[in-house]
Length: 142
Figure 1 (cartoon, rainbow, N blue to C red):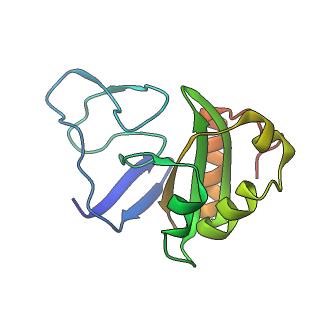
Figure 2 (spheres, rainbow, N blue to C red; figure 1 turned 45 degrees about the horizontal axis):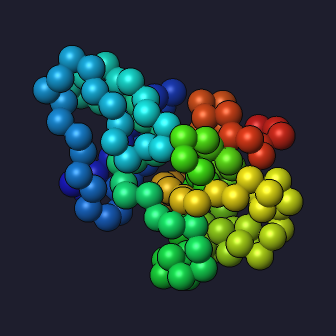
């Protein structure tokens, strides 16, 4: 499905690649693409999730180098059910810098996977994600 995902607080993100959304039929459902299971009330018109539904990618040089440079937005690094870091900027460049060890906390926490969202509202989206997910290595919001 291509279109717009509504995150709440007036934040929207455009889906630029095909995404399969979970069904809305159940009264309660979980967000299957999220490393942290989030209970959602099924609302027919919109839902609030940390990142758009997607398959998490392995956090290694090969998977990061496979994405197109210049995609601006937010990304989240995680290990198991623990969010390690949420960041913003040129997604490919920032993830490569993290792989090169630019942040000691990230390196020590050993994230295994990452997800992202391409959005022109990076600042507001990053703040929302940090407040919602409380990642280990984000000392501050913004």
